[in-house]
Length: 209
Image (cartoon, rainbow, N blue to C red):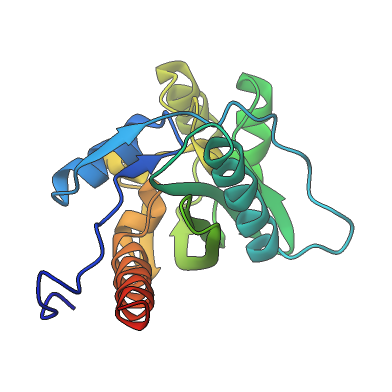
């Protein structure tokens, strides 16, 4: 990817994370990326009728990236959104304790999927690409007492599916897929998308020589 000569390489745009999520910021930083943060500030719309969880996550990621791209003059905006799906139902971030209880009650003892949509938006060219990652998990059958104890911790706040895998809960287990996706940003997918974007920018730059 980096073999092109300096004269043909495009200037790599700065990365702008369209999210204030501390977990996404930590993942990007630990992976070695240099980036800025600019929250989208959008109000997330509900799923459309018959919209799949993956389509919904990608639509929200696109909307968040678009909101930030419209406020900056340059950069590569990374928009993300994570949802949880179980038995056809979509669960986002709980609005309060009762909502968190509802979500966890629906998920306990079951397989479910964590799906993150990722949108890369190159502001200079207006090029946007959207993909998603899916991870299969299993949640132990929590007792009512265990569930209430977790709710008391308030660790469910701001987390899709009302739980944080990074909190090492012990009762949520990955069956298949990316761990970073469950935390909120699939690093493997992001790296693939960045490589593809770099290739497209490099090809476009070479064509203009």
